[in-house]
Length: 143
Ligand code: ATP
Image (tube, rainbow, N blue to C red; front, side, top):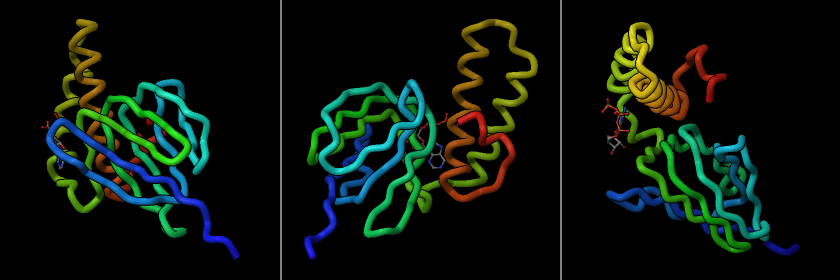
């Protein structure tokens, strides 16, 4: 039987290469909604939003928290270039919880559109990190 097809997946931030593996498939938060990518996918480039990438490698699922950036897909390679990305074991849960609380306080009092949008983005980054780290929360439907 032929080996199951794989696709090379790399996650890069301005600081480092966070992930580089041959995977089976992924699901990621593109700007227009969740997008699934498999080997031999049609080429595409899309902006990404804050959220969680679900990666399946050798049949096992893992998660990566990302913030905004871009994804470039070629039939044999996926390049995800994002401002920040963390694997579950790199996520400081207490830090994400505090960031979420700070953002919630700001969301309650901010009226200015720019500051509201900033607080909302900060809230979403914290939620994505908690979700990727497997922490339970009821706010995840936002992402
Ligand atoms: P905080 O307010 O806690 O700094 P933030 O959302 O403002 O959170 P970012 O600007 O998105 O932080 O990230 C700055 C750097 O810190 C990045 O390298 C990111 O990967 C890392 N980082 C942020 N939060 C966490 C976390 N909870 N666990 C691990 N790394 C984190």
